[in-house]
Length: 283
Ligand code: PAF
Image (cartoon, rainbow, N blue to C red):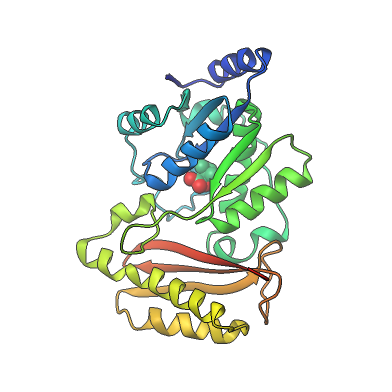
């Protein structure tokens, strides 16, 4: 496995693979890798000849009061995990390598980025779309793998790829959870023992919502109330949003229709966590 820090270095390797007719899978990450990322690497390994994992804490997608400086970084640990999963290249650029002097180009999406996390994190998806676009141009993947936990991000990237006629397939992979239900996230490491226990309220609410839908609930307000009441019972939790939206447009729905995303962001102490489930009609 190679650890490459320059754009030119990755492009050089990618050109050689392309010349040999090999397919490339890309797993974009910000490092602090966990089993969720590992499932993406395994999916990429199974589907493509070569696998590139990018490890880059992207300054563009953090707001001024967010955790960019404190975001966990450990490239040695991350590299070892990548190596164990058969990754061919870890791309680990510096911010200066990605955004050089006079950098001035950004990818901005319209309405899809306004709702949910986009509403509470202005500019976040501009940063995500810009860096993902750059990573696609650098690694030129045939397939790129993203987790369903960041459901809005996944929908936005699929939209961007379709809208801009990009030549790759975006693959969404299921949420990976701890045994007790908490969705895996790099930010779980911020939680104290007490907060870690309190954080279970997210998956409790998600599972209750899913169960209600399976039992026939189709009213979005009733679903939000059910989940909101569960979160409200946890003193350390503060709801940022609980929304029921169309899975493609991210616009709120009143009644669960063909493809619906129920998503939440909840702060446990100062740590903001997200979780969701998708309902597809006929499932
Ligand atoms: O999901 C993430 O870790 C990031 O948003 C991504 C896609 C790697 C872009 O920085």
